Image (cartoon, rainbow, N blue to C red; front, side, top):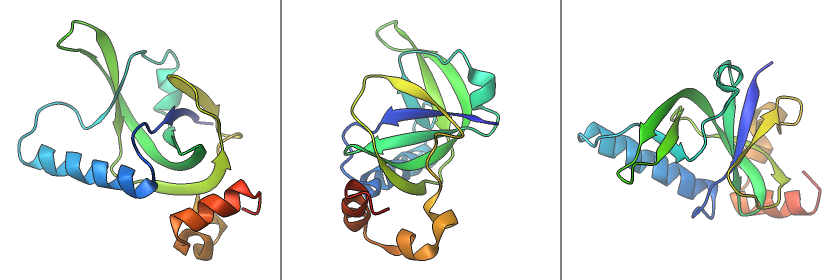
Length: 144
């Protein structure tokens, strides 16, 4: 059973923001930008093998778990400030998940497969077709 990560998507106000950021990074990479295509974090996960065995990074956006990206690798780096970090290498595909409220926290958390919200596509296309704001409000009301 895979292990997942949970992280705040700081600066994003919607899944559309996350998708735009991912597209911009992919385009920059095509044009020769250096560095890995992923997200840097301060701490290296100790359970890396479990994470890379089918795990995903679940993004918390505006107080809700809203989307996920499959983890494809972990890459240790040292920044220009000589601080060690870990880059979470992510698949380009962003998968919408059933919105679930989650309070703000620092860093990242492990998320077991049994605690992870299901993909929206698994629950029926009509929910995935809704505007994001409507899904967010219905999730806040406990109707999704």
